[in-house]
Image (cartoon, rainbow, N blue to C red; front, side, top):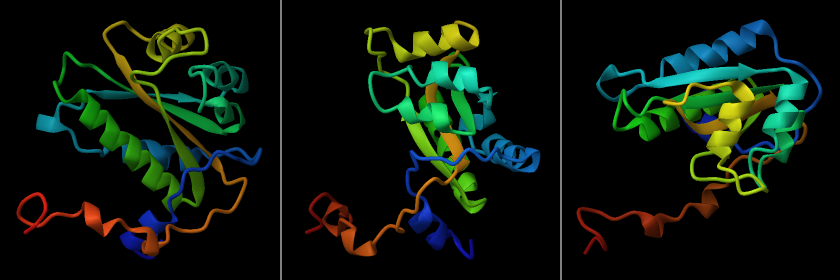
Length: 178
């Protein structure tokens, strides 16, 4: 990307991926971005599980009743988790790391999509967090925030159109701005 403005316009959720695998260099670049994400008091409470085994991606695609099926077709999933005992703002810290992964993916020309896990459930009503703990053998104290699905784009999406910016959501100096 030429600049950050172009990057954030171009980054759109991608739920269709090609079968092309990622290179080791691409994966390392993604993980470096995640590890550079800022955290409160530099607690680094987040951790990441990198999943590229097709069978495991398939199992993870059932972590929610809807909105996670496409994960089975991704080249890679990065499960973003954190330790609530290490930081009271683990959700915010893990969220920043999640978006860093997505922005880095876009910069590499890859597609990505955030799969919300916290406070979501499987089709059987099991907590998505518990389901993923079981699939990936995650220690009990860690909480899963999201899964970032990443792969080569399987379709074209137009960049965000600035005509759709909701300027009415901006307030100056106080709510209502008057």
